[in-house]
Image (tube, rainbow, N blue to C red; front, side):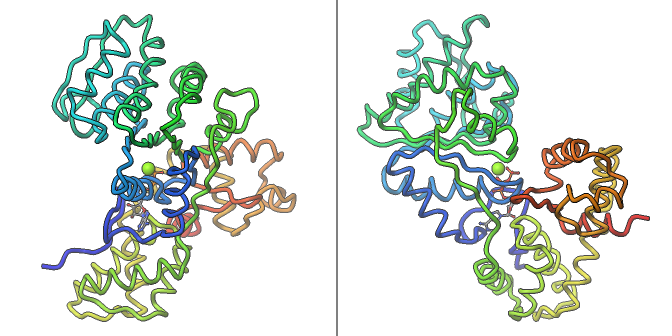
Length: 381
Ligand SMILES: Nc1ncnc2c1ncn2[C@@H]1O[C@H](COP(=O)(O)OP(=O)(O)OP(=O)(O)O)[C@@H](O)[C@H]1O
Ligand SMILES: [Mg+2]
């Protein structure tokens, strides 16, 4: 049986990834020429999928790549273990070699290698460093030289990606940033990528003059996938899934989702399922409407939970945005008509909603990320 060709909620690779050729080329070229990058976007725009594609291409050019997912790094000890494990998983050498590098850098360290899944670090094998809690900062500051060591030894370039970098700022104030900078600024063979979606945290870390990582990289703002490019992808995926769809209906889909990568895949997934259940192969205009309603019914529980999780002014701002479609949320008539209070109150609510990934800021304009949730809000009494 043909599988649903639309995937959402995981990293997409290969045929499930719409090219983003321009972005891949620009990022790969910057990293090859030793430019550090700060890649940011609202949630679920495809940062992780994109960087995996770039790393795949760079590995083909013999560049050593390490991907460090900081999402589970809730303590400094976990961060150290995740960092060491990520280096060991890079193809920068056999495990033994990397372990020797680590032991060289931090001689008295006790190091345990565990198989995947036995602690809370995900993927592949895991390294656990144990040292007295007091000097974990010292351990880390030496560990930061690991990529440069690996690259120099292998006579290759290396790229290190920190995904969900904002988590670092939550662990220990700014100590990690300071020691990271003090090491990596000397690295001659390694480029760094800092990625994340919590823009206020990333912005502060990289754009404030008083922060250690100030201007440590070139900012790269990842946007939604352009409609023409997404359209070609959607048509092709329907074809792979055994269905045809007209250009007009593709346009209707991307118009509904405003080309948001995740929500577009989600809607297409539902359209494909619905058409499949009918047993015929040509996607009709009505299918899109039916699929959208189905999707919203499926999400009703999640939307209710989201709504319950926000309070007071946050609710008021979100609801007013949905009901009026207003994007200039600080405009005085919008504030007055909806009883939202002072601009500072709206700013606080907006920051919270943005952190939760519910709204997005683009220049001076704000919009609700999930158009289906927006529709759900519009229908609230
Ligand atoms: N280039 C792409 N082509 C097709 N679909 C994509 C693409 N990029 C992202 N998506 C869709 O968006 C979803 C989220 O992608 P991904 O996890 O890479 O985004 P992210 O920006 O890293 O998200 P988060 O902010 O949650 O970490 C994917 O599961 C997929 O459905
Ligand atoms: Mg991600």
